[in-house]
Length: 466
Image 1 (cartoon, rainbow, N blue to C red):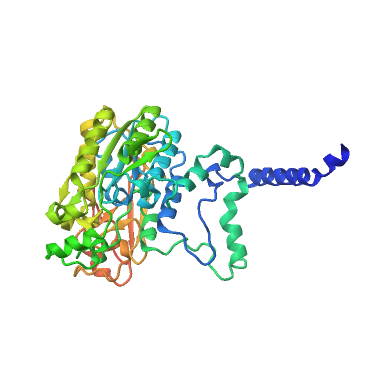
Image 2: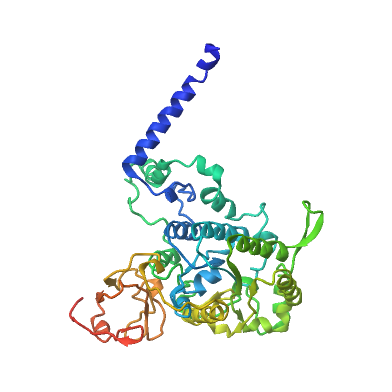
């Protein structure tokens, strides 16, 4: 018997040593529980993908944040819904935008919704926001055998089994890997950004102030030339047959069916996917609202029937409405093509218009509150008393140009010949506010700047170089 037990002594000793080390690590550094994960890859010489970083940063930032309305979905919602604008239509409600990208799939959106509803027992509404163009429920956006981010979200942030093996030292994983890969950071700056993607740089500087929104950066100068270039592969929009031929090469967006071996029935992805969201909402006592991103007016052209099976989609939504009358399902809207950067994304100049649309839609179905609560808990970051802006670097703004309307001297997220700029910031209630602008080589432009706060002319206190 002793001989049998002796075989396990090294393993027992190793387990004791590991337990002592991890307990000491936790006592010494006390890393937040949410940081004990392996969600990011940290591959050697490779940058993390934009989508994975956005999902990770939103999950981490929203830990402990209490929202009344939770939005999940694809990148059309990431770029098209600005929570502070939506909240202006819903006094007293806190709105968080947890939308990321299509490669999460509806299974990934569902896992993010599960996580946020678990964190927010007082939540009242769940918004599923997606573009109908390629973003309706179907196999590639749901099934386990597809290359989606959903399993990683579940394993790292929801799975009870995985949580048993997540140790406090995982919170230092980036530092350990960085030291190992780059020899104590001799070959890489210690605080180097995880991605130099311009969209991610814009995201890191704005998503906290905007509760999850970030501007679109796909189109240089925010002036779209061909919003369908990603799917038409150079087809001539003025040639209907040429467009039809290009669209026939793509999988048609319709109501897809599959054989369900669990029920031995042929089932619709619309019923299964939207039904899963409805069941989740019912389990948490929240109301589910399906909101579809606006569609380009060009999609009404007859040749686009090669891409969109509108009759099947409308019939499926009608069937779902009948099956789940408790769910609010909004209608499709068609907007001018110039409001889009690509076929599935609202352009930044139209994102406030898009956000107002969401605010108006929700105001019709959400129970009003008599008292508006404007505390720090409404935003993903602690409110400030002042804001420093360096016009030669990144900051949480949009729309900056020089006096001639040129944008060459500004980082990407400032671009937009609009004559006005947006700065998203939140101040401590009842406090004064100081905005400091630093600049190089554009002194006259800054001196000629007019500043309004929520439409009210601000008082200029200082001039000079800063």
